[in-house]
Image 1 (cartoon, rainbow, N blue to C red):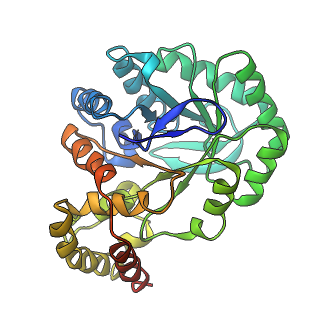
Image 2: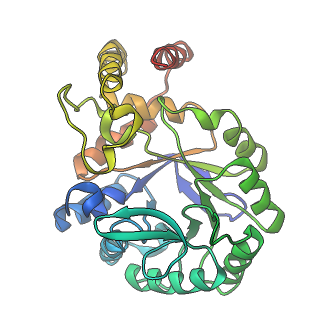
Length: 325
């Protein structure tokens, strides 16, 4: 597994990380998964060369962090880069975010809230430091907190040794420029897939310019790019309101995946592996979060890091995706 530098920290992260939103289970994923399978999945990722595990308190109200914490007890903690987040809360108020089940989530990035969150996350994870601490969603009115205050709190936690690096998710270029004004920003997390290429316009170039890792989430569009979704599938939970799962659009994506079969044969890989390999081919600064929920899915996804797509095939896949509109 290729390792890439994590900003200015001196740490290195695997080009592919394990995302644990789905592992957290809960209403967003139509229920909890088998805990032992989740633990086996995290262990398999480690054995396959993945050293970055991403989680967040907002993934089923802390359950994802608890599961990751259980897995860490069976692994070499010093060799794992643990990434969790702050800014999405449910036990205190802030700006309205969304509702999961019967619980309302809020955005809150005040220094006081961050201080409370980090302590609870450390406890759930069963560790005394967090390698990457990331703001999950950015502050908005009416509970708006200036980035200067937020990163001030993060810088203090860094000095105290509770966190080792700072990240920001779901940002625009103005956010990134503000973070850089007040401290180091080592990693940015954003949605990116062959179907959703918006970050290529400005965020990716900005990260490359400043030596910031761009960590990609939802690279398989919540499973749509695995090639396992049937044409008559009716989306539920977190997929229900997603653009590419809507009637008419989902079928076009499935048509495209069927047209990828000659490429899968050429590179001797599966559809999802090909989709991930395409992303990795876009920049040396990209790291993928793979949301696997079984050891087998981990093995399949990791294979993408070993594929070197030819330039003409990269372009062919892009043209197919652009043709979808």
